[in-house]
Image 1 (cartoon, rainbow, N blue to C red):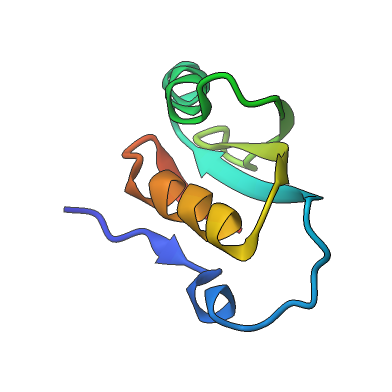
Image 2 (cartoon, rainbow, N blue to C red):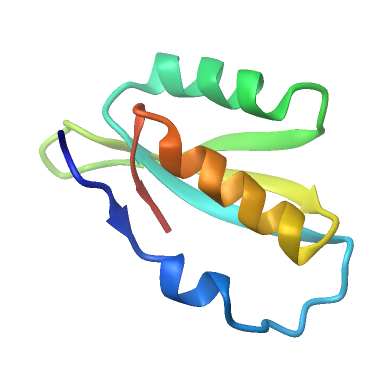
Length: 94
């Protein structure tokens, strides 16, 4: 099984000093854009969010997207991250 790069894990437990609710962005890298859009919709349900295409990798194999939404607490932000991390369509989360 492919291991995901976990670039945010070390920051998950650090106090960021955020005032909630606030806008939060996750950069998602995928090799399956259509499946990603469906996964995000399933994951976030009725929550308001924006999923915007960012760029295509140099060799065209990967696409990156910016997922932007309002998070209501540290727990909410971390929970979304953990759910994204479990999604097989997402290769890297930044």
